Length: 415
Image 1 (cartoon, rainbow, N blue to C red):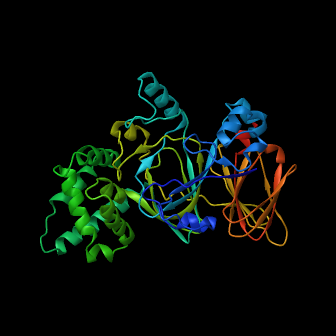
Image 2 (image 1 turned 90 degrees about the vertical axis):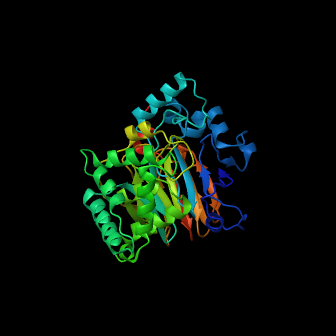
Image 3 (image 1 turned 180 degrees about the horizontal axis):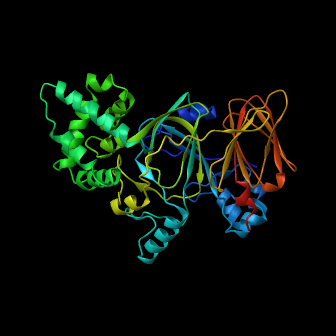
């Protein structure tokens, strides 16, 4: 069943990248995300609505969950558990993190009981579901911040800034001393983030504002630009240009600076603080809208709730290595049952993708022919289709690349 949607026009979106991916003329406006799923925020439109009697996936699933999802998922709440997106960032997104399933259920129930409207500015939990995310780079590079970096690296950045300060025409170590003081506590990352957000959101007169201003100036120095952390300092500059004075500028130095090459992936588990900076990617996530923000945004920041959700454990960048799943097929399989993403590039022979549940197929590049047990369809560049689980597996032929989002085995089999 052919599906499609209109890209979301968030201001950080690219004016060209999604249009080029789809093979259409750019609209001239920012196009940030193309949603392909049944999320109420922007459910995918069914191209031949008359075939099922409904205009979009959400309406069809609600009316016929057994037919649309299969009996196992229908018995678990009649919802498609994943959302596939094409994401194009031309400017940095906000720093954010997502809750565990337990945190999401408790937070949603708490805010419902308090009578906070779902659309309220200060609402944190808009549904009772978690929101782990997988991002695979489609552009040649994709840049992001993800997870707290080892403390040794944080102190390495601070050392470079001290050297830059000493070499400046007006040395003043006070701001860096203050930052170092917060980084020397019992829980250095948590204490530093809490101080920056609490003190730095009140305007340009607090101590955090002073530190942010000084760090921004020193990050632009030749000393910083020649160091091993040059990319992190370059990021400080770009964030300062987009969000002047925001405490997230300093928080970015506490995080892993990640550059993905085409086909490389990040998996963002619950509690991982992250921000996409630039690039085009295919994103697959659990179908939820629960976001706790932590800077680089004019939107609501609930500092206590964010601190409860964040995982402050230093980590390496959370890359997810694809596994071979057949001729021309690799699978990006995270630790959650909600979703798995296949990348299928047929050769002389067809590529085979197994389905444990319903699937969404997105075409990149050239023409594709997709056949299941009961139906087949042709896809042109940028086209998408929805496949029900009774198709069993998908045989894919052609000159393009198929991105196939489906459920993990345990999600589809649990009942």
